[in-house]
Every structure is written in structure tokens, then in C-alpha cells.
Length: 385
Image (cartoon, rainbow, N blue to C red):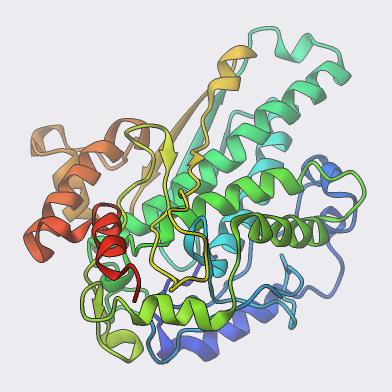
């Protein structure tokens, strides 16, 4: 489940109840075994809700330093969530990262289970939106006749590719929904946070760290993810919380306006989801001498399904939107209403949707709406301040 940064404060109490349900009365065995065995064991419940925030220096945004606490697939009171600033990746939304990581773990385990059962179909979706994601897996003809050990080894490799692919696609779809005006409460739009400058990179990084954590042969998933996250933040050059806030504050008025939560308007977005070069590059902001000069941002590859072909598998993912905003998106995907379908194929249609989103963004905010393009100009303008 996922609660976006539209900050649906009127339902915070309800969200806390939902989060509490993630703290199950009985331990989930998949979370107690070593993380490398979690894929085979599976997890009983989909990831819990987490409450997000903006990257902007506004009332309600929580900035964090290097102590990020434990990780809790189920509820953990000591888990820390908010926004950090790093020298090599700019702002990172730890909430989005954790959400994407947990969905990666869940969908990897779910894929493995279906593959081992020779079951081609499953569906999933976040509770906060109403989209259903339909997955159909095609198997090698002789799959059921292969030895158990061989099937398990291949299923592990294939599932480890499918999980992050599905999780990253799902989080990207949520960004698309919010751009088209999705309202989790029915009246407060989440548009201000759609493709905010740290979102897609944070989502992607979550899938990458979960994939690493699932290779841990000694620690349970929660502990493995916490260690992997801490290590990656150190590698990226995580800064104190005041630096994260100051980096946002110095672009106020240019990159965003407003001082209180839902009244914020983010004018700079990052639309890089890896369609052009297969990588996502983070948005960098100046941090007033806290980082080395001319630090190059680190780019990460988006998940792919190349390994499936190697083993004779293929996967078809279809997104079936059920939100009020679905017709706006379907109009973009299927301009000829005679050819209108109810589902979206992200491998075919995301490029068309993102082209529309970028043009709409330019119409709203001008040519420099893309934070990636504005970063270099901003850095040069603020050097030495």
C-alpha cells in the first residue's frame, strides 16, 4: 500500500489504523528467515502504508540525517522516514524508497511462487489507488518436466528480475496517475507531487536496494534492507538534515512556491524514468560547500526482463486503471476511441504518456520545468553563495 505526498491529512487517523494492521499478531515466516530464503518462503501480506512528504522546505516536511533507524516491512515504531540530501544523488525520499523496496520483495516472492507452481497469472495493486495490475507469465514448454532443483534455481533468477520490474512500473504508474489529478481522498489532488524532482530516482533506488538485500544469506529481510540502505546512503554521501533543508530552501520561489503542505506548487519536476537510455539520473541541487565541487550524479539502470528470454520465459504486464482519472489517460493512449481498450501496456504506452506529460508540463510551467535541465544552470548561478 502506498500513501503519496499529496499529504491526505484528513485521513491520517485511518492510515495509522491501516499501518497498525501491518503489525500482525503472528510473525510472518518469510520475514524471519534469511533474506535470501524470503523469496522461496514468500510473505503473507502486501507492504503496509507509509505516509509521505514533499522534498520542499515547507511545514510538514521531515528531513533526516544518516541515522535512518531500522526497516519495518510490517509496522516498526523506530523506523525513520523523510527526505535526505546526498552529494551524488541530491534529495532522496526515504519513504518512497522503502515502499518500492518492500513491493519489490513482495512481488519477487509472489513471482517465484507462481513460477514454481507453473501458474501463469496473478494480479496486485496498491490499496490507496484502485488500479489492478495483471501479470501473465509464459513458460518454456518443458518447464514442468525439469528437475526440481533446476526449476528452483531458474525461478529464483527470473523472479529476481520480475519483482523490481513490476515494483518500478507500479510506482511510475502512480506518478502518472497523480499527474492526471488522482485524489486519494476524493477531493484533494495529488498533482503537486507528481514526478517531483526526487520521486522516480527514489523509487528506482528502492527496487535496487531490495534486490541486493534479498541476496543476504544471514540477516532477515528487514535487517538486510536496513544495512543495505545505510551502506548506500554512505556511498552517496548523505548529509546532515540541515543541509537537506537548506538545499530545498535555496530553490524556493524558483523550483517551488508555498510554505504549507497542500498549498505547495512544485515547478521543477524530473521526468526521467529511463525511457531514453535505460537509466535514471537524479536531480542535483547546490549544498553550499558541503560536497566536493563538480560531483557527478550517479545514475542507476532501470529494471529489465532480459534474463527471462535467456531462460525461455516471457511476461505480459497489463495495467487496468479504475480511478476517475482513467479516461484522461486512456484518451492519450488510445486517441482513436474506436480502438479504445481498458488496459495499458507499459512497455508500449508509457513513452506516449510521458510525451504527453512533458508537453503538458511545458504548457504549465515553461521550457525549464524539467529539473534535470535546470540543475546545471542553477548550480552555475549559485556557485560561491
